[in-house]
Structures are given as structure tokens and as C-alpha cells.
Length: 288
Ligand code: IPD
Image 1 (cartoon, protein in one colour):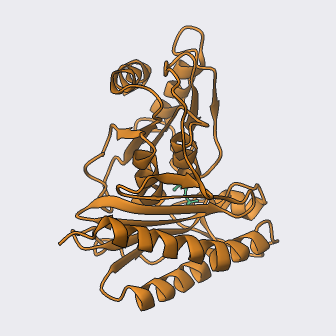
Image 2 (image 1 turned 120 degrees about the vertical axis):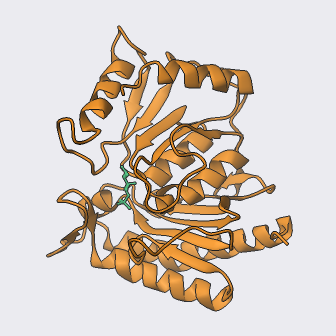
């Protein structure tokens, strides 16, 4: 039996409480601290600090105690080749999303707590304690920013008039071996007066924040190739509950790892037809 709407709401409330009372203050206190050492993961721009690991351990302990039958996947403890998203209720967690921001004291790092069931995101809570922005939602129960329902007022959506979230990500290898050149060419296409000529693009440095900003209508879309399940699980649920859509790339294949994880989030507040037309014009600017 899948979790009921009420059970999902209770889990959402638990996650919100955990973030506001326990995790947020830790992240806020340690941001911009002079970390004498931090590890590089995949390469020199894929960073992790001791706080990422400590925060994940606290979250795991708390959630395991309260939901002993649920599985847990975390960015800092997943095991290559072993960790898999199954149909079981599974917390999918990024203890600090925007670790680079966290290290540099740029106030856009957050904790992203998602729950997936049957391989789909069903609960999400994302907290940026620096700006006190807590986005949350669960399947069938709507999406909220702090305690206010996210309400993207009816507003037309066109590529030209949009502000798009884009990220450099950690994949920076130039040349035919990577997607870096294609990604940069796409940014140029979107910005230029010969291409999409969008109002602008923003790079806040956190996938979860980007997705929540799309959910709240602050961004019109967010496109990134290279995210992991923990970057997007919570934001995905919040986005859909706010009337937004996730399309493209590996929409139905966010297993860990996949080769080309590509996420494209589009806001609500407009008709489905407009969303579809937006995807088409956006895609006409994407290289490769
Ligand atoms: C990263 C951030 C970044 C995005 C990367 C993510 P992390 O997560 O969300 O904005 O470009 O794709 O992996 O490493 O800070 O948790």
C-alpha cells in the first residue's frame, strides 16, 4: 500500500521541523568558516567538507530512528555500484547542496531532504537557513515557502521573456570527451540576440534552490546536465506540487549513477500548452 496523503504530510512536517530546529542552525553557523581542508570528490571543483558529512550522519540517525523501515540514500554515504533507488520508501538526501557556496560564505547553500516511493519523489523539504527560505511539499498536499502556499500567479511563459537558472556544475573538461563545450554553447545560444535572447540567466550554485525558485515562479526554468538524485528529489516534488513540470533528459531514469543526468524544470502559472511550447523553443537552443 502506498503511503497515504496524510502520512506524506506527517513526514513533510517531520522534515520541516528537523531542518528548522536542528540542521539549519548548524549549516548557518559553519558557512564561510575557514575550512583548513576540504576534499575534492570527482575533481578539484567537486567539493565536500567535514560539515557535509557530519550533517548527513545526524539526518540519517534521526530519520532511521523515526522511520526504521525506510531506506536512506545520502550524497556523502552512497556506495558506487551498490546504492540504488528501489520502489521502497527511500529518503534521498543532500546534507549541503551548494557546498561551494557554503565554503565561500555565499548565502545560497541549503539542505535538501526528499522521499521517493515507487521510484518517484513524494515529499520534499529544502532549507536555506541564510535567507530563512524553507520550501516544502508532498504529493497531493501542495507546496509551500515557509508557511505560505506557493502561488505562481497566472503568468504567460515564453522563452524570450524568461529568466533561466543554469549551472556550470563540476564537469569542466573541454573537448570531445565531455559535455562542457556543448553546455557553454547552449548558454551562448540562450543569451544571444541571435538565439533565445532570454531576459537573463542566474546561477545560484545549488540545484535544489534552482528547482525551488522555479516552483515559486522566481525563475521560469532551470536546466542542468550532471545533477544527482539527491540534488533534485526534494525540489522535484515541490516543483510538481506547485504546478511546474520536470522534462527532458533522464526524467524517468534518475538511477544512481546514470551517464547523462539531465534535468529541466519549468514553472507553473501557465497552461500545459505554453509549457510544451516553451520546452520546444528552449530545446531549439540546446547544443548536442
Ligand atoms: C551541486 C550543486 C551545483 C550543481 C551540481 C550539484 P553539491 O551539488 O547543486 O549547483 O551545479 O550539479 O552537484 O555538490 O553542492 O551538493
